Image (cartoon, rainbow, N blue to C red; front, side):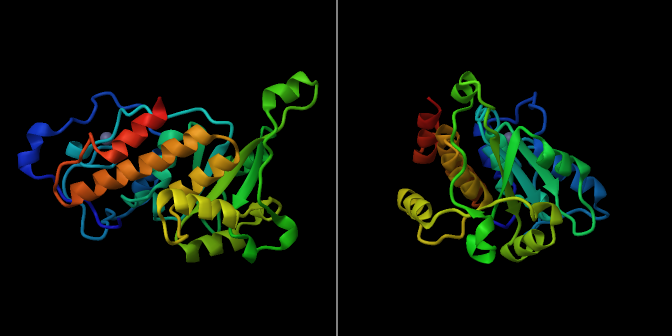
Length: 273
Ligand SMILES: [Zn+2]
């Protein structure tokens, strides 16, 4: 999914749903992408070169636009994407999909030398319990957890107890080599618990999704985390949306129309009822 999408065939134009005239305000990943583009001295060219106009709302060509699906939802958990420098610019970055679904998605560019004060403020915000999502085998065992606090906020508050904190999943949106560097060289992450996804949860997911390997993309990891936190509807929406997005992306690349009545779209719609 790394190559740029080619321009749609002119013959497809008649059936193209057009980019909505009124776009919702850009989400955190979209804003980060715009900031990163503004800092670039030369235009970013994805492998294969970017051809054709892209929709600013979904990054697809207009004929394959996925805006207006109404996927955004409130969840108990939040997602904080720490993105490697070039990541927001990649047309296939799936952190973007997380921000399309999870209302409380935050995104920050990672740099070895500078830390965004807004990231530090977020991590210090008492409403959140941040977890760094990272494989436990690379971490001191005392930092590793496999579950998150599932206490129901409302019932807890009714009991007169302190409301439990909302889980905030910090995902390192990067290649594996970059993610290891980000994990080691981000001192603000050192004090935080590390959520290591449990092999049993991973294999259940693989079974459900007919996946053979465990190299998950960012939106898949986010879906697994949301499920752990009890945000099951959002987790399933994100899973189905990844399939829909992948379908549209690949069909655009092949210069073929997307099948909006197909199986992936049907599953996404079913999950939204
Ligand atoms: Zn769009």
